[in-house]
Image 1 (cartoon, one colour):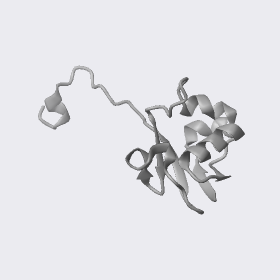
Image 2 (spheres, rainbow, N blue to C red):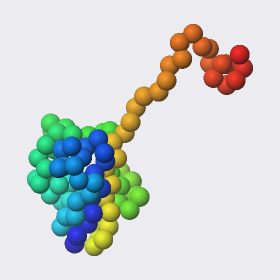
Image 3 (tube, rainbow, N blue to C red):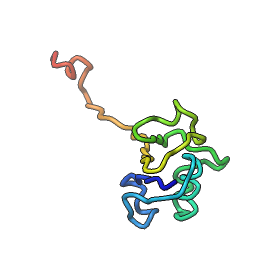
Length: 106
């Protein structure tokens, strides 16, 4: 079955700047393997050295998080969309401001 894999902006530089790729796959794992076979530089960004999907890489099939399905064994159907969404960490530290100032209580 042909599925569409959406590539997030930060990883497009490792996938010939493509926004998405159509691949033949029966499971999420097969799709990701096909993707990293086609674009080998992506592999180190998606998988750890032991071959597991990195913890900060979230994968969805039609908006369903595969962690709550069958992970990489999650079956895909013709026309499904797989989205790779890297977690983003960060925030703002306001120097010299107490927590009350953030709540509008100066």
